[in-house]
Length: 352
Ligand code: SAH
Ligand code: SF4
Image 1 (cartoon, helix red, strand yellow):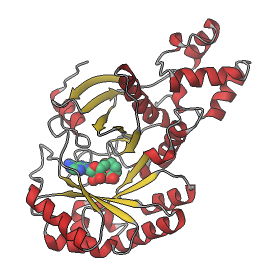
Image 2: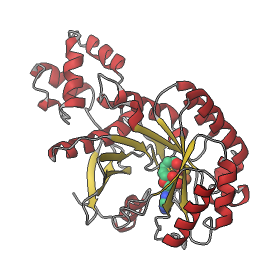
Image 3: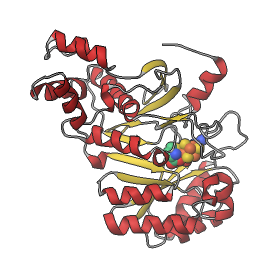
Image 4: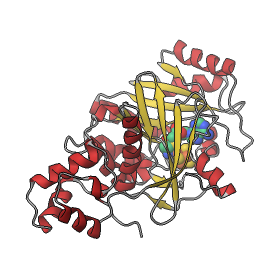
């Protein structure tokens, strides 16, 4: 049902498609340039190739799969969130964030998520399906094109939207390769961050890839009993094994791991909770990001106060763990994982 589009094709696959059309090799570069550099979104706009080839391509494979159906921009205009419809009618969302000099897009990798974290809007639903590489790539290209209209450039890509990237490993890594390919979108590997809830086999596989992309792990607690409640997959991949896997990743790649902690009022935000996180991460080449919970309408969980977040950060600092507090941004436009989609599902809104 999820039909392949041109954005699903690696350089080699595109080359082979054009060979099937008996086209000269340089057509590959012309098409790649049009899509990933000029950011065209339909074949008619690829003026460098013959009309006949445009028609043949349009006849055999759609260029891209996404149709934007709803968008919200925060009052300060620094967060833009878009809901897309996929060819099979499913919907996903992606977010563009302006932060200092960075222009970061946050990509979804699945429709829904099977992990079911208790505080996450995506996790309250089930997994409907994996996205294809092309559906992931298309989200980035959509925002790259929006940025181009403002004479801006996309600088960073984070896999932190709906879904668990390492439970859709192949498509996620293929999308990374296409977006990183010097002949594709050509964004440097160090500008990518993949965020996982802690899927150990995925982290091990990612370690073996030997790529320069960053790894983020959603930790949320340094205590197995509490983490089992917040992140149910902790029962399968408990903290000790998760940290052992992260340590192996760091030893192999010499790269710093980012640990994400969403602070929930009265749940995981006490000084004792901070000390447990510090003890767990002691001696690791890492960085902790503290994020106040983005409240989900259907959930009683609330974000921690600024004071408690500051105290948590201090406790980590005192233990020698580098930490950054990321104060809630985009709450006004429901930038939290899966929230725009949830709103749309409830109200049946369908606006352009
Ligand atoms: N499945 C992956 C990536 C997508 S979620 C993961 O869990 O890491 C991206 C990040 O958003 C994760 O760190 C996740 O814990 C966080 N997140 C989800 N819901 C949130 C909420 N309501 N408030 C704050 N952070 C949230
Ligand atoms: Fe899935 Fe990540 Fe949400 Fe957990 S936080 S339910 S793993 S998307």
